[in-house]
Image 1 (tube, helix red, strand yellow):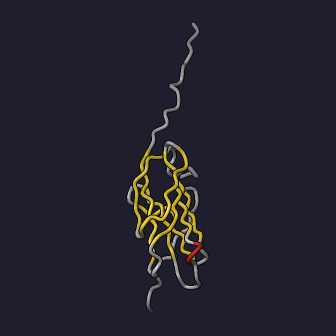
Image 2 (image 1 turned 180 degrees about the vertical axis):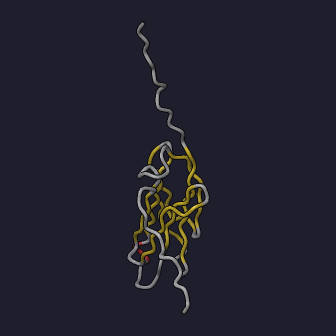
Image 3 (image 1 turned 60 degrees about the vertical axis):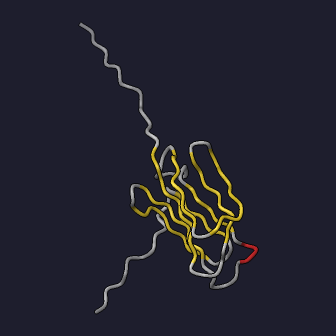
Length: 118
């Protein structure tokens, strides 16, 4: 008697991430690029703060990417933060003042945990 086992094909489920670009300085706009199921999207001069939910193939990979470019108005101490959230949890956060910042679902750029007072 011979039997054969056939495995079901791997099912990939698309999922939603939240992209965010924020600043605590007087930077009013940035050029933003992000990925969704259709590929790379670009929006010019979006008002900050900016937030968008996007569907991606794999939220914990480079499929989830957000990038902000504010180089024309970049100055020291004019910080912009980009973030990727997945299922309500922060996956990546990157804060820079150089005019360009990016975050990916595959990275672990996160702020350090708060220090405890002694």
